[in-house]
Every structure is written in structure tokens, then in C-alpha cells.
Image (cartoon, rainbow, N blue to C red; front, side, top):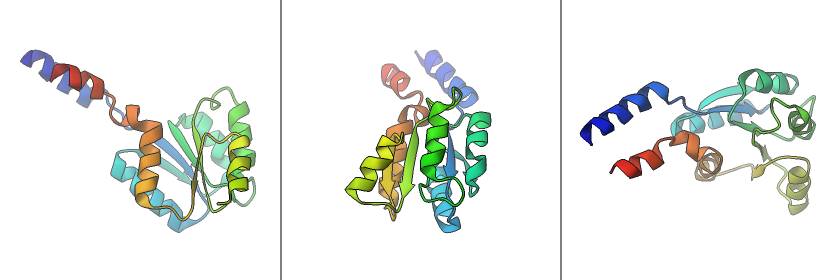
Length: 151
């Protein structure tokens, strides 16, 4: 049994790759805050302020989650999510709207446009981290079920 635990621990170190999150946000302060929070929960991140490159970067890097502002200069977040959901390489990636649009009507319109989840700004860091865990918990803790079997 001890040999099995040692083997599993070695494999965890070798095979675990933290989840990758693509963040598209035009406000630099919000971008820094989200990057910090993602680092704190154990995610890697790619942060963009340019809405036009979001789809290309998503196709190229295949992130585990996309956090997307709705009110962006150039292409809106709604335009981007529609493009992502039509693209064979990205349609499966969960996309969360992180937006200042906070009314019930806005939320309904945003989710109807193709977003998988919604978080309104300003947000509490705890709410942000909870949302990240909701979408990435298996990838943040890939060996949780194995550990429970070995204990």
C-alpha cells in the first residue's frame, strides 16, 4: 500500500498541469485582480485586453475556461462568445461573462447569447474563486478521488 501511495505521489508531480484560463478584459485593474486570484487558486492564465485576438488565442491555446468581459471595445463579449461557440475547436470551452451589466434582463440576455455562467462586477474575491472552482474543480484537484481511495 505504501508503494502505491509513493507511485501516485510521483505521478501527480509529473502529470499535473494546472488549468489554463483565458481572461479577456479591457480594464487593466480588473485584469490584474483576476490574474492574482487565478494564481491564488492554482491556475495558469493568459490575459488579453484586445477583443479581436480572443478567438485566435482560444483556438491556439485551448484554455480550460474563458473569462470574458461583455463590454469590450471593438468586438463585444457577446460577439466573441458567439464566435467561440460556432468554432469546432472552442465550442466546448466554458465561457463566463464577467461584466458590469447586472440587471436580471442583462443576465438573461447574456446567458441566452451563449455564456455558460455569469459574474457581475464588482465582485467579491470569494465569489470569483467559488466560480472558478465550480468550473475547474476536477482540473484543480485531479487526484482527489484517487486520494480518497488510498486513505
